Length: 431
Image (cartoon, rainbow, N blue to C red; front, side, top):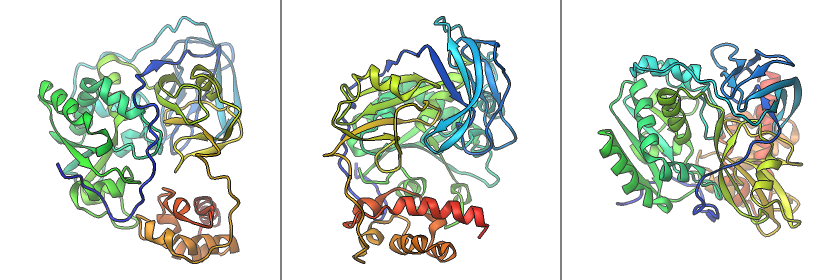
């Protein structure tokens, strides 16, 4: 089977150190700190207060409007406070719960009707979001306003180090396939594609067998292991040959892309009534004692995950929430796992770029690597000058922040940080 791909992009070391590590449960700590903003859109509104007794699965944050998502307790115990605490990208209200260690659960009512409409309702009730990192509320994404004829599961997992989706598909193929079929059913489709990079080719037979056993129409598409193969627009082009125009959504070309873990979470919510309060996380990097793939309850501190995996060694120079290309640098490990936390990385000097940025040498390597065909050097230059309007003209708002430019830059310019700053300024100034 010839591997499909997209134009441009880069080759990066895979470093899938945890790939052979089976999923295991990370013990929840004595206290969990559950953010009420675990998604794109408005944070959820707290439905509990200090002193309330909750179960694992109790609604503790109600979606505030259409583009928002319900939040659930991940443990049973007593609410200690609702407090504003830091996140990797800012701060938001957290529900602080003292864990009683019993893990008594509260589940959603049994879902007997598996029609698309009922599944969409359950998706909203269970607080499902895109779990690949963006966190867009799933009930909105799976209610496209235009006709859709193609559904793709993004199983590329193209970021280095991250292997939690791989392990989830390998170990729970039947559940994943059924959940993906439910996602397709919501869209009114009876078939879907699974895009898999060829460094995970062993999954093809596993998933095909699971689909056949479940009488589900699914087709695995082999993709070239290239970064960012898992970006929506690049994945759509590789699988279908369709191009999503700038400023448009995948649904505008008849496609919806879903995440591996979102599919599994829908299965769990539909079959077992389990709302979304835990997920798989890869803990890896050269400074982690035992790189692993974990089941982690939301609100668990990163420090607890790292300790469970053998701790962080003294030669760690960089901590990241997420992958090395699109993740966020951390000053410490006192942050909480959320619905969108796919990885925690602790990198050594040999793995991380610690060089100081130098002036741009106008080599053009960033432009040659950019999968969106942008001119990143100009976006960076105009942002540094404070000329955000000109940076916008060069496509700052179309950047997918994949990091190909910064990775390719011999001057080690922090181009992604410039883009993120520019986008914030464009929104702030309403340019």
